[in-house]
Image (cartoon, rainbow, N blue to C red; front, side, top):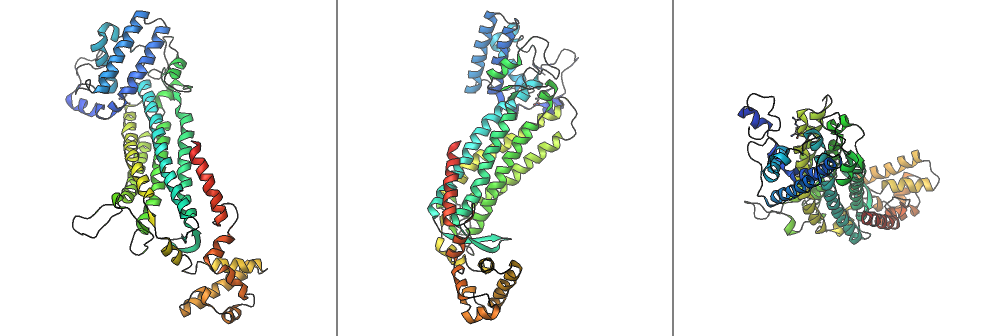
Length: 461
Ligand code: ARG
């Protein structure tokens, strides 16, 4: 090995196979910018502790600035001998500051507290980007909900027609969980905003360095309470991975519906040409690939979470090299979501709903049977009886191949004395949705309130 950080007690360098196994620069180089920022903050506390002179701090800072610029420009890159991002950057610092000065920076810190800090810095920034992209999807859903007005559709349970609902109500049912995901990132950030820097290898630093100063410098709310916990805990990483997976799950539900709605059989929605793809053999095809990739990436996002949790299970305190495996899963999630979310927003923005077809199907499949039962309850009939009577109506219709509103006054009276012609007031989709007018219900007035609330929430962030 070339510039290993730990050569002193070893007679020879690591075997090539170990080097190949150990190396992590092909992924942890993504943290290089944060590492240099951490070093800048560390240099300042070394100076405040009297371990760097004024002149040394000035030269160290200048050398780190040059290093940061070279990393940014891509003129400084890791070499095969560099074990990890920290090793590579130490080499870069020694080259720029000289071995004498550069060799002073590592005092009082360990790669263990460094890496734990860098992952948090990285994830806190990514969480902000992802949350903003999630809000973009929410905004597209809100815009579609607003455009849908009072358009109706078949609401489903078990994928069977259940009760008619407003299309806007259904679209907003996809917006709220995404808003909660944004809240989850915000809540998570409270826990992520603690800096492990100063924890050292595990026991803290003996050199009079101030973890609070480094924490403040790096934008954290404060240092971790426990140096062992600071270097060993990855629950913050796992919690990020959960929220990222949850975003994937929430998108995949909407994706699955769009895929179904876009079939010939449903015909509820048409995808815009620029948000669908063709087939290399079937000239007529227009495929919902954005939605399918969203569904597929949800699996991958869950896999990343599962892999990470499995790595963490049963690990003793404090740092173990297993923890190097924490990064690729969340890096993969970040790549997956930051490429998926903008495309998903574009697909939602350009959906065109066939509201006529949806309206036509809304009352089919006896989706107004509950309205009959609830109308009877309002007439003073016990619900158990009302349920039976409405069920008998459905049975009669099924036998004759007709719909509920095709039953004549005589048919209704024959089924139950309680079924007067007034029941027809709820045998329309409009009557049905209008009757569900408690908070959160599908009545147009309630959905309008809900829409206003969702709009307000999405602009609050
Ligand atoms: N590259 C390691 C990681 O990603 C940090 C280095 C800690 N290595 C060590 N031998 N203590 O977790």
